[in-house]
Image (cartoon, rainbow, N blue to C red; front, side, top):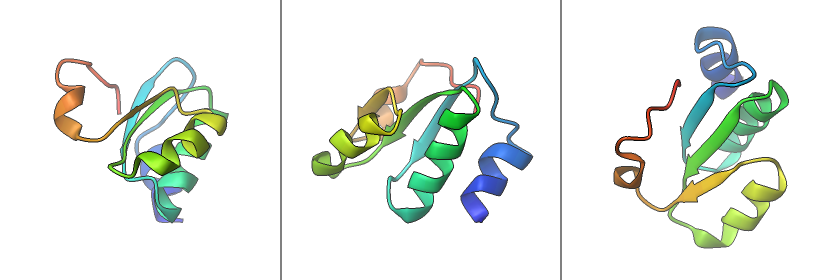
Length: 77
């Protein structure tokens, strides 16, 4: 799974890390869920506001519509 590999294996997402994911489609959901299960604080960029409720229900702590809104947040991954 591409997003799992990128976030967990290559990126090393772990407890206490702040992780940002762009897009909450199929791959975004897999990657965010994996990071949440590792204990990371996960934030997503997703312009479709109707999926934000699903994202927060699965452990995402922050949703924004545009990546520019992340400026200065100092994500680890």
